[in-house]
Length: 77
Image (tube, rainbow, N blue to C red; front, side, top):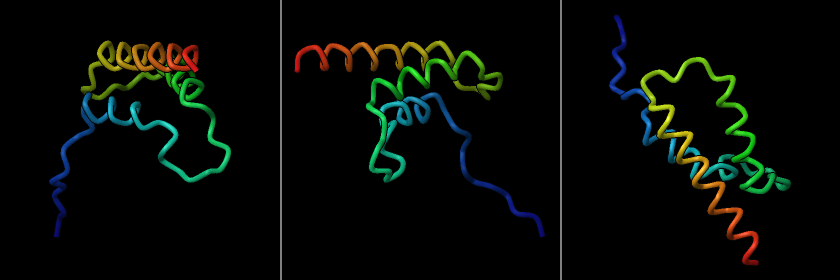
């Protein structure tokens, strides 16, 4: 008997949602600040070989936009 997966592949929207919620995926007490996580994510994109149908440019642009928004928010506080 073979099992057929009905789950759709990870999409650009899924990746953007992952970025939006960085730092909320585990319950560690000492999570790094969101802007640090975004910087780490952007560094990791330089090494990522397989984007598997995810629009790399869109995702990186979104992560950079999120980082800019966070940096502006940090300045305002």
